[in-house]
Length: 329
Image (cartoon, rainbow, N blue to C red):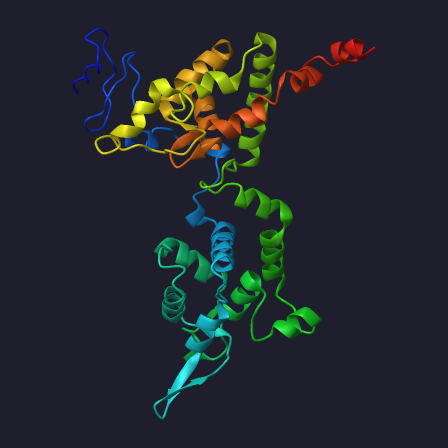
């Protein structure tokens, strides 16, 4: 593949990149392009959570959030689907069960879940499928009433559920408790990519590894007396006028993220070399940090700096508490 020429300069070569009409700055740095979206791998796998579409708890969390944000009661759409036709009229059965086809149609009718993938839907239907005693009802096996009760707390049996006269099966009770726990909901909402301080959740092993990297970077910042905000902020076109021209070329070069506090993958790598070059971070470790703060394909350096660079006094209290106490005396 032929390397692109440096824009505004005839000196120096740049690495070839995937993309069309990708511009290069005078120092050979690439603009953010759509190639950055898939450039950070998720290896090793034990550091990263599964795809949300393959995790029933993630699927329910997205459904719960979307229903709440749009003020929709799911039972209003699933309930009417539980009916039979008689003399030209639809008569409600309230059996509490729907077929997979009827459930899919009712979810799409709510105008909330048209983007639900088939894999995610199958996982959802499997989680709430139960064996029916009557063979003629075998295809109507998805307990939509329990689904509504877990997501919105509203079903035909809600009063009985609240009074305790009707109890959810243990597997449903466990699912409901995990879904509505404050810890899980807090981590889920802060992972949204439109959240200013978005942070992506990792596995237990991934969070443990990230905590060790975070501690090492904080110590590097303290010992070197450097500022992560200044080093990474140099690449932010919203703060640095020397790169603000980048925002004017979106018609030809697709940008990843134009919101303040974000920089591209290539800018992140150069910034981390300046910030923690002496730590000799591996590619997997750099990917882990990037994926932790990934926001719409870019690196949310603002949230990263909030976590690793709280200020010199705070860092001194962590890494040199004796010096702090001596100064107070």
